[in-house]
Amino acid sequence: MNEFLIPSSQPLGPVKAGHLAWRSPSNIAIVKYWGKFGRQIPANPSLSMTLEDSFTETHLFYKPAGSGEDPIRYFFNNERSPSFEDRVVHFIEGVREYFPFIEKLELEFHSKNSFPHSAGLASSASSMSSIALCLVSLEQDLYKRFSDKQFFLKASFIARMASGSACRSVYPCFAAWGRSDGIPDSTDAYAIACERFDPVFATFHDDIVIVSSDEKAISSSSGHALMNEHPFAESRYAQAKANARELFQVLKNGDLKRFGEIAETEAMTIHALMMSSSPGYTLLLPNTLSILHKVRVFRKETGLPVYFSLDAGPNPHILYPAHIKDSVSAFIRTDIQPLAENGVIIHDHCGMGPVQLQ
Image (cartoon, rainbow, N blue to C red):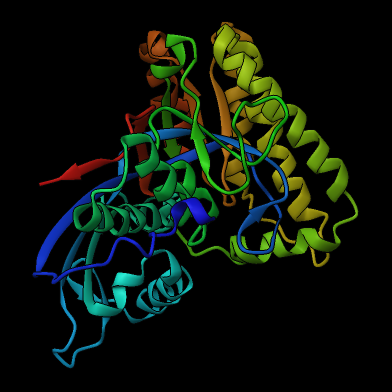
């Protein structure tokens, strides 16, 4: 998009070596995007909750080109990561038109996560959004051309081209991505912040139950691709569009019951699409289904607004507002934790978005 290109009237002068860093969170989509086309364009809108304690911290060290080293280097947990480095290099090559100054620099990224790999969290969302934020921050340092709003719009736009879910991680609390006639200013190009919502949703907890930490049998990218020929694709896209419109209003009116109903319908729909694709596949495990059943029984018996969501994996996210934390924590400890792999549950909550580090 032309608005994100650096004007030719803004030439770049000499650049000194420097360093900058961002901490960017993961997010859990309540309304899921499943299916894409073109250059990371979503087949349907999505709406997510930003997390707080599950994040990637990325430091970018840059210096003038010419040392003879690889121009882009990537380290994870202080070790060179060739496989992810290839992905980062490919991503940066794909957005070079938006950062033409990169050809004059060497870039070295150092990342670490606050959560384990394969933890049922969107690690690509946090990692790629942190890298995008670093790149846009570098541009801002060099050119001083953005307002705060413009900065995060470009960061979201760039993050989207690395990983679709990453574009939502640059905002606090709730974000929408994908054009929707019920969400003002929504677009396929980048995510926008959902700034108006009932305060109860800002208190929401997300307890992620690690049923399995094994690598998924099929990647999310492959799952998205299977939607191209899926017999239920058009019905799904219509459902997601309706759910995104409604959830946007539910956030504002504070309807906890409807929030939970949409979250659970979306979670089960995505996995139904996986099972009914060609070839079909199943990521849910026996303990996953046991947990979902226990959440529903607990809600029915207590009347408390506790619900579940799922990403493209077997690990449930248990969602509930802070005012019922004591009751839900006791339930999770006695009924849910025994079903978790090695008893591992990651406790997180609605978060305030990325943070630039000194």
